[in-house]
Image (cartoon, rainbow, N blue to C red):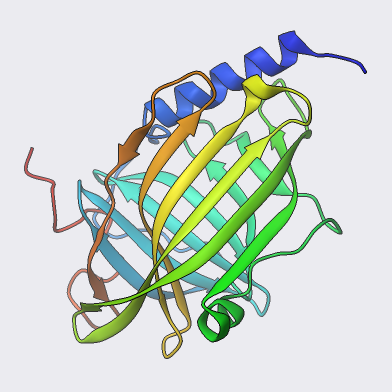
Amino acid sequence: MTHQPKDSSMIARVMLALIASLMGSLAWAQETIVIPQGCTPLATVHQTACNVTTLLTCGDDQRQALSYKKGNLDQVHLFDANWGLQGILYQANAETRFDLKPGFGETFVLADLIKDGADSEDGIMLFSTRVVKNREFLLRGSYDLTGETVDLDGHVFRKGTLSREMGREGIASSWLGFEFDILVSEELDLFIEGSVVNKAEGRDDFEISQEPQSIRFEGDAGFLASMSEFGCDG
């Protein structure tokens, strides 16, 4: 077996720094977000702690979630047409990202979660920075509905959890874990990530508060906003 402790240690440090800083922010902010070319906005979710996320459909086979923190673009999550994870872009450094390796494992399907109450994901994520290219991380995740519901501005969402872990095979120090609260709607065909507990090998767990409080659609005040209406006072 070939060990790569130097590589693994560097990757772990980069990821921990990104997570600890809430993935950072770009230096620009604006009241209304810019929609990527070829994408159509579906809804804007106002969350706690000055977080706000706009969900998009991009062509026939991709969804995106653009997450803003205090008016600045923070993260971009990429999904397939069924809300299966395809990639994560950390905007603190636009070259730091995870991308799903095509042709490996099974992706999450929102319709299956709604029908069965549970679903899963597994595969290989390729981790890249300006220095590291396509380091393979094993991906495993489980999705479960809790049986509870929540009302957001007259729209009923089912509550659930997502437990996800990633790590390099045989390298314990590279392990990362994420425990999300999630909301899903069959009627709206929407998948929303809420607050998340971040975990890393050898480090204390910590939570990022981003609990959905309100959802806005085209024509509503706060649609496409880059500033949440909740938690921006401090």
